[in-house]
Amino acid sequence: MNIQFENVIPIPLQGFVSHSKVWSTNYTFKTGTHYLVNAASGKGKTTLLSVIYGLRKDYKGNIIINEKTNDKNSYNDWALLRQNKLSMMFQDLRLFPTLTALENIILKNNLTHYYTNDIIIQMAEQLDVTSLMDRRCETLSLGQQQRIALIRSLCQPFEWLLLDEPFSHLDMGNANKCMELVISECRKRKAGLILTSLGEYIQEGFDEKIEI
Image (tube, rainbow, N blue to C red; front, top):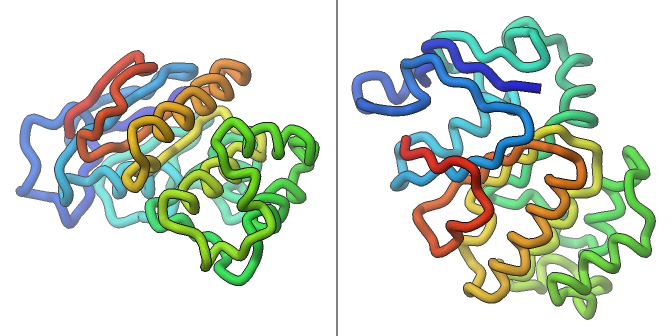
């Protein structure tokens, strides 16, 4: 499933962005391809993922997903896309603070029953957060919360994984472990990946790097 941009520009960025590979041009994110989107703050990285995911509609142009422009999708269409084709890890994580780490993950997984509890624990072991599963998320550091949110984003079917600055509070070692899990999951599903970054040290595992 390709994601096509046809002369798209967010209204707040009009007049402030030039020479972009994505904004105000025709660009296609190709199915199964892994993209790293680098840019300074305020250049539209979060906006890019938000318009793809259908959370923002304040843009001009057309975004075509699943052979349909975003503005033509009904509430039910968006629900199906987000359950089966698009998974997003938000920059603000959106974890429930009073629920445990495991409860936050299970809450998402129960919508589709995509993974067994054993596989969820295996992913937690890979990211060194097994000991945190019974702790409330409000007691975890931001780096620990990022790893929980990442696991949660993998607990559903998807053709595109959208990650908004997912490693901003992680050291290089933990970021590399997360990246290995992300690439493994995307390859297993033949899914595309769009990961935004402020230019941190994660640079490997991508087919294309974009400056916006």
